[in-house]
Image 1 (spheres, rainbow, N blue to C red):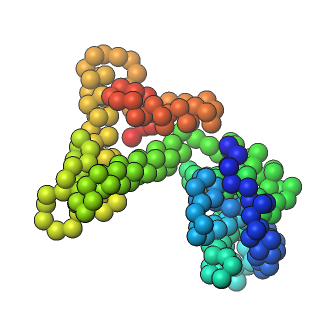
Image 2 (image 1 turned 90 degrees about the horizontal axis):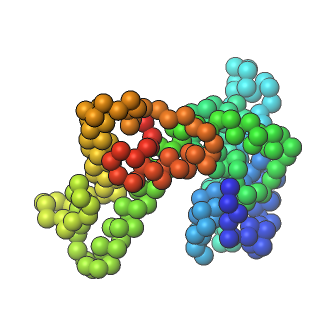
Image 3 (image 1 turned 90 degrees about the vertical axis):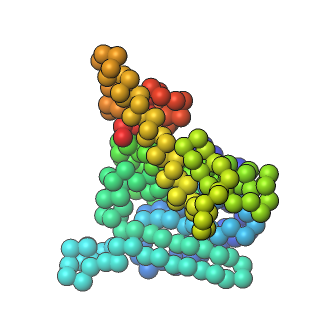
Length: 243
């Protein structure tokens, strides 16, 4: 993962993060910072998204009185605003196998508050859990961000205006009732993209080509995963994720 411009250890609140991680009721395999700080755009009032894995004793995993498999802590203090979520290692393993991009971000985040030798071992294991299906997670997230940016651009050009979305992109919202929300905007873009894929599939089959454009493409490397996501926006017929 690319090193962020934000320097966690130079943050004056870093000692508070260390103290909060050390105060957890169960030993931590790792604790890292995710969210805006990891993505490279923290604001002065951004909270700290601290994520990690804790280790329950064996009797709390296989016994009748099990858990907690997820621990959530919210700190809203004058000197720090923090959202802490840790999962038991067994649950974290399950999430790694469910094409969950967020847990991989947490695992590989370079903004480390607490680490162990097992953390390094788990990162090596997780490399084998990356599949081409993870691109759905990131392509969907990227599309949502692009729609939001375009919407903000339209609003900046037309302050006070209301906007909707069509198959061709954003347009002035002329319907009755409130303008579409973010989920509706993302859904409109997804529908347009699916229409392009279907048209490409029909054209490919009609042309007698051997490879269906929606057929799975083997993942050769994590770099190939990113390439698949980028290729999906190049228009009909471009290789991308399977529908």
